[in-house]
Length: 137
Image 1 (tube, rainbow, N blue to C red):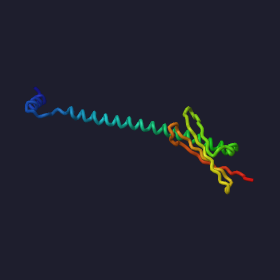
Image 2: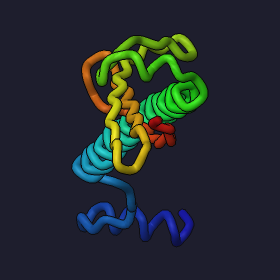
Image 3: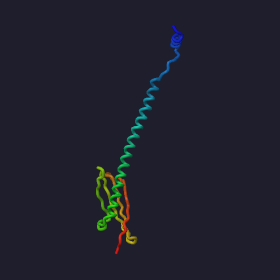
Image 4: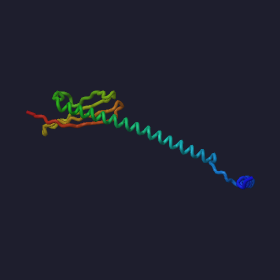
């Protein structure tokens, strides 16, 4: 026999370990760490997609608020309407609820128009405020 084989047999007979490898405990700990990392990563992906949806909703709501505010600046028929108005808009397939409030300032000859846009469950997503000068005779 060769010297290496004799040494190996001798080591195995004495009980000393020369073979290296992972124990079952080490493998289980590694799997546990990987499972925790996978759960954390999936949670991160879920949170990111929720954040993206909220950003999209707020962007669309702010567009609706700006459009309604500009529309109110151009037309004059809102002057005869009530101080408070509300309605619904659908933008890119998403429903929104809006509210309009008018506040007049006679001494400054202006009207403040505030538009607030909400989600279906009542969360405020966007708002816009504009001022229009009116001439009182």
